[in-house]
Length: 80
Image (cartoon, rainbow, N blue to C red; front, side, top):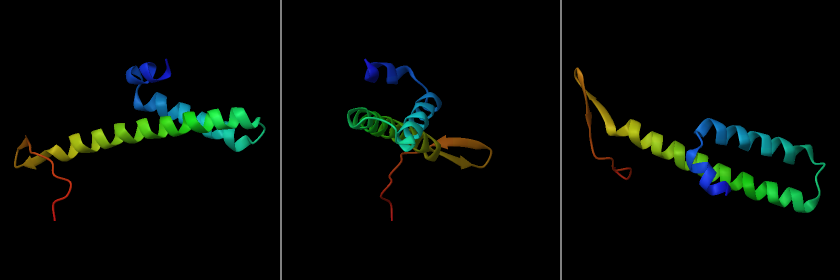
């Protein structure tokens, strides 16, 4: 269903759906049940978009420039 479809969707398409969902909620002319369903969908979309951004950030941070070449390194977010 929606979750299986999300796997194949790009970040941009999920984010566009999230923006549309927020706009509908902000309009405020929905029934309570519809508002709750949209809110739940928005939370799911926000979570998926966040996961995709986290994965992209990790991929970027793993590539560390070393002179002329890029080298992959292990990523440890809790380094002090």
